Length: 527
Ligand code: NAP
Image (tube, rainbow, N blue to C red; front, side, top):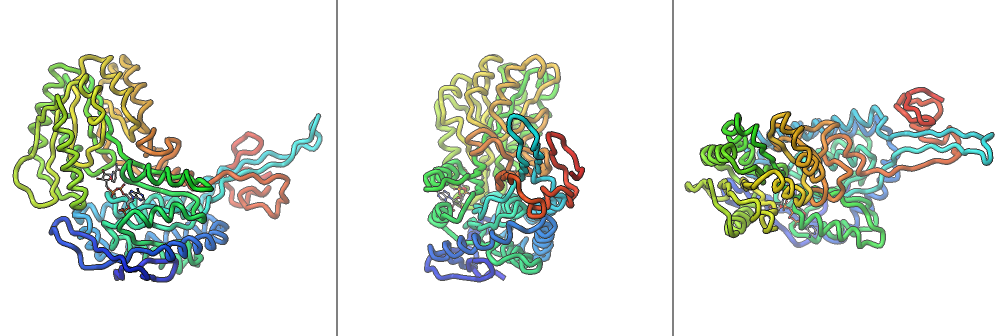
């Protein structure tokens, strides 16, 4: 049931007087539930409670945390059709997408459960003492990853489940041993509340401390700002706009005690189209890209917003087929009138730039909030000279850049901002012959794709979802896959600590049978 209240640990609270509703973009009407924004006092209570919970939650074993994560997944599934209905009514996304995203969300939770149950993720390292060493004896040192403390997670507008309340950031932080306070996304506060109720049921069933999880409503930036500034908070996870992510990053850096903000932000995901591949496959790649650009109304962080090619017949053919195919795609509903409005404004801004030619635009009448796709073309020189063309237009938009030659293409790639992904459509011989272009792309992105599309982010340990700024605030980490747990830990060393007082991960007997680094050698052996 949706109460519209804040979940401060196990308690429901609605002391504030600022209320808001969510919006159904399909019907273009407000939804019925009314949500109460968290007050400064409620924010403080959630942070203090999270800090208290940290004392015991940080000591929970991998098995205990795994049971909690699995119980969350089960409780989310038990929400059944009610969750799907609220999700679709708050996002305009179809039920199929809701179910797919729910599957991904519970899959992530269960993957983290396995990860912490197995236990080697703590990267235990042991250097045994050498009392006889000359000229000075060597002490016994043992290191492992320990949780950071309470983490604030900002729900993402474009993934109401998989990157929100119990999404990747939350699953990773809970797996690490960190309590989580979610700043619920105002566009899907009801979806957020249902998932929050599932997390709290799971916490109760598996004996987790009160305060291990809180969910706060907000319809403005103040709640998030206060949370990021609260002294008890030790880290932040964010997915959204560059403006929002950067503002929170700056705020966190200005605290008396600065804390890390792992923000995954905008990206235009350049696609490099090399001539040989286009000579044989221009039409087929263009058809594939018409699908990728319009997938989910273009509201994916990996949407291919920039297509880079070299002048010639192959690129002409690619542009022509893309123009023909993309207008055949029926537009779909965007997440919210604000996102739709931002798309329309971004599209207008882009196409009004000098030197831009619209090569395809869906112009038929559509329902309110439906995002109509558009593809424009521009010369390489114009693109290089105009930074506005380098900005993300969040929606079914893409820009085809016609470069004079390979060296201009390489220059453009070199001057791009950091990106989540880069794709190369090429033959293998072209890859080998264009190492400058390939290296330039590798330097600008977190993931490089050969002959494929950037949309579709597999959740697995080898995925890297992040990239040089502004794709993310820290290119050393991924926001997807079990390695994302590394954002919420710090390495910690014990020196000459008695064996029986050490965490199990570092004891001589290796009771958890995890992989450890002992005197420089990786092994599961005991000492
Ligand atoms: P957003 O504006 O970045 O907001 C995300 C969250 O951060 C919201 O909960 C918002 O709070 C909060 N926030 C934003 N600015 C803040 C600030 N200065 N201080 C504190 N908190 C702040 O993103 P959105 O609302 O989800 O979508 C808007 C635009 O973001 C889209 O049109 C798109 O351009 C971009 N976006 C990009 C991606 C991507 O993956 N590339 C994903 C999603 C969105 P309130 O809502 O409560 O104000």
